[in-house]
Amino acid sequence: MLPDGYSDVPAGKLAAVVTCLEMSAPPTGRADPEQPGITLQRMEKVDIAWYRDLYRRIGTEWLWASRLAMPESDLATIIHHPDVEVYAVMKDGRGEGLLELDFREEGVGELAFFGLTSAVIGKGTGRWLMNRAIARAWSRQGLTRFWVHTCTLDSPQALDFYIRSGFTPVRRQIEVFDDPRLTGILPETVAPAIPMI
Image: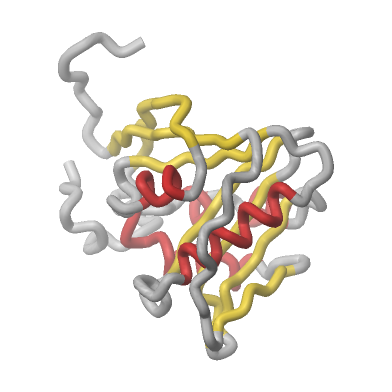
């Protein structure tokens, strides 16, 4: 338990406030924006290099690094698991969004990764993708909980977007981790608003 007041974060580390959100039943449907030229494709036996490229194009600005630092065999174990579903938002034959649903825990679905590249942000694609994520999750037999987490390093719109989508905040945590720009996983030039110490 952290005491009230300030707590030092060691040099070379980052700290983020993580908010966990969940829903226990499908929410009321939200309008589905038209997405001409956009499709959602389930990726079977995902190629690791393809996955990491899309993950990097979506998440570098937000310091997503966990799946880049993970050994390939560990990543393959997760994304090739029969209860993990990976989808790509496709535009002009290229993946421009990632949806990863993890159903490995019985009765629970996790929105493990959800993001878009700059090529489709601001066009209603996020709402369109979330509508499909929620529908897919609640189509699973026996699902009682669908959850997601976001943090203060993610897009400032993320938390409100999840709440508007029907998720309710249920838990807050502090995550401390190595700065991926200092470990060489991400370029030192990304996320300039977050100083390296």
